[in-house]
Amino acid sequence: MFFHLIKRFNSSTSSSFSDFIICGGGLIGTTVASTLAKQPCFSDKTVTLIEANPEQTSTLPQTYSNRVSAISSFSKNLFERLGIWKRVRRFKTVDKLKILGVYSDNALELDNKGDVVAYIVENNELVQAVYEELRTLNNVKIIHGKNIANINCLNSPKVILEDGSSLNCQLLIGSDGTNSKVRKAMGVEYLSWSYEQMGVVATLNVVPSGLNLVNSVAWQKFLPDGPVALLPLSNDMSSLVWSTTKEKAQNLLSIPKDNFIDALNSSLETKLKPNQLTDVANKGVDKLMKSLGLMPSLITSEIPPIVSDIVEGSRAAFPLGFGHSVHYVCPNIVLIGDAAHRVHPLAGQGVNLGFKDITILEQVLTDGYKNGRDLGDINDLRKYETLCQQNNVPVMAFIELIHRVYTSEFPPFQTLGDISLKLANTIGLFKDQINKGALFLRS
Image (cartoon, rainbow, N blue to C red; front, side, top):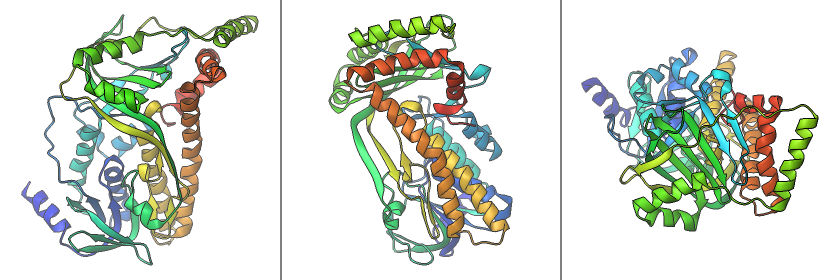
């Protein structure tokens, strides 16, 4: 413990040069720091991680946090390779994902053919696990509680902190979120818009339904103003992510607890009367599938768990929006995770896209370094940008399409959204592709 204290103290006062500087010590920043520090060919390189927030306690809270992530199998494999997963003290496996419509009984059930669909982990718990691993690495320096005042992108990148100290590096990595200072310093074009929605989160006590007594199913229901999702935390607790209008979100945050629970249970149970086009289309699709000998995959009889209580103080909300940087790189600087791309939370994809960025960056930098190129070589960084965008852009477009279709008031779009669940659950090839990763990142 004393060694760790000395190490963290020295990290803010040691040499002003580091091979890698990572701005932002959240999930993505800490993980990329661990990935680079543990890469054998970078064993003689130094990694400096700068995080504006003070160091957090590693004590596991008795109550669950209201901010969680659905970690894909691909991302879990990354954490296992880095020796981090064994440090995660609590998580819940998701064996099945059920997506429900609001205009009919059409549904899509994904079980990943017996494999785990995702792992639900509290963000704070996962970040602490990565920090614990980072503190064991001699080539990592952690600077907590210091804000970045300025970033000089000319020649060798230079980060100037508010206390006047500065650091130079070979490669600057911006993992500092949607309002990235690194991205702004680069001056790259950033496409963004607000959904005029909020994501309401809360930690819930639930009563599992039917045969699913271990609460291992993740639920998502598309409502006209946005999806509501229940992600399992334990056998009798779930995490809520409810995307809705700003006005409704404010109301959900202010109403008494019992009214909130009633509103949530009602939303999970509600079926709205379909428009005439949806009704006709469903009957037509049924006839067509029958004539082609296609039968929908069997949907199990589970229903969403009943919400019985809400953890005091766990209700909160955050704004929802889209963002994408036209370029992820410039000489000696690279963007990663939310600093480069931001998506709607409806598919649980955001953080997993960031973890995929990390593995691409690791591979590109390793290949370049082994072939004698500098860490910030622009050709290597452009390859990183290309590979990341090839992975990210189709997924982002898919998520955007889903959001637009299911929140549209245009009757044909409402019809399309409803029957697409039936078609996806019936056509094996399409369902297999979704199971491989359209909703939880491809492994």
